[in-house]
Amino acid sequence: MTEKLSDTARTTMIDPLLNEGWSLVDGRDAITKEFKFADFTEALGWMVRAGVWAEKWNHHPEWSNVYNKVSVTLSTHDVDGLSALDAKLARKMDILAG
Image (cartoon, rainbow, N blue to C red; front, side):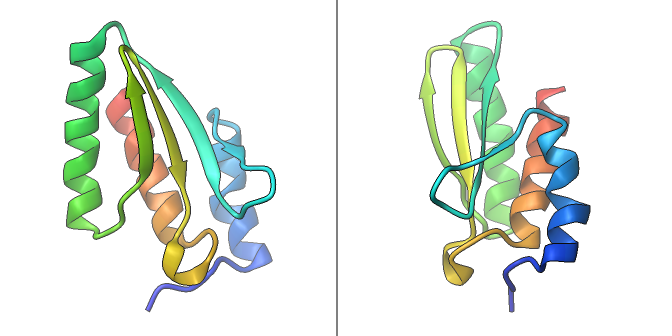
């Protein structure tokens, strides 16, 4: 069962993501980031690669795409806030974006 992050886990898992361009969402226990790519094809390819991991981990992002930009918000709906799955998927997205 997935659990909401404790204060200690937040420091360990979320704080490093904030240094990588993720930010906390105002009024919600979630993180967000906008990824920018060279063009639409690169953005779409990244979404497909990230989507494969999201499906594998059964943890799906809220995201939207406009041309070369992909806006992502991560939160675990089952716990009404951030969980280890959000940190895991955020790290994978950063790695895939290179």
